[in-house]
Length: 74
Image: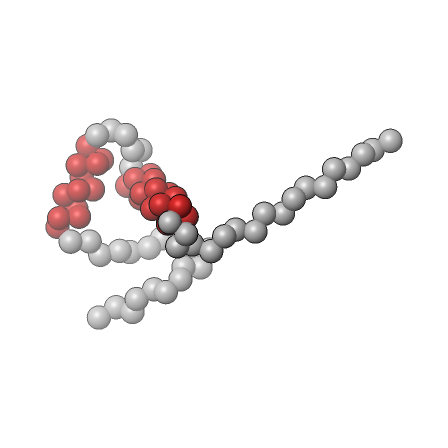
């Protein structure tokens, strides 16, 4: 059995997921709408939606925002 990935490295450009036939059918249905440029686009959009949901539910740690200081040049 393959080892589960706990965290991806930012340099990772390819992953090899395993999906069941029902998920393949759902992916194909979504791709057939023509709303996505390809599988990568579909996955990116799905992850963005899930990420937004988790942010709204408070399941993700808050991001620290760095404020910009106003600089006056004379």
